[in-house]
Image 1 (tube, one colour):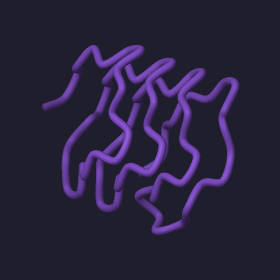
Image 2 (cartoon, one colour; image 1 turned 45 degrees about the vertical axis):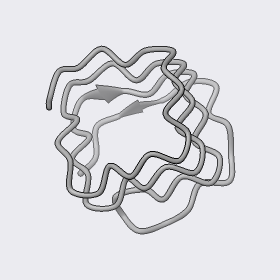
Image 3 (tube, helix red, strand yellow; image 1 turned 90 degrees about the vertical axis):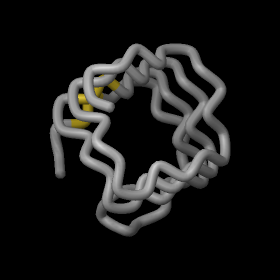
Image 4 (cartoon, helix red, strand yellow; image 1 turned 45 degrees about the horizontal axis):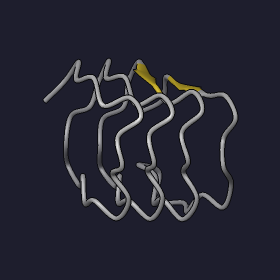
Length: 74
């Protein structure tokens, strides 16, 4: 599932646990309340994405709306 174009998609509440979203375009997507635990996001574009309430790969919850972010972590 890597290198997907999910820009501007409404993905609120989706469970991506263990998925590989490396290199995917998630810009301006609604990722609020998603579970991204154990998800590979290396090189994913999260610019303008709404990550409010999202559980990130490091296990932490996001409480913000990110105006601009590129995720090169895990």
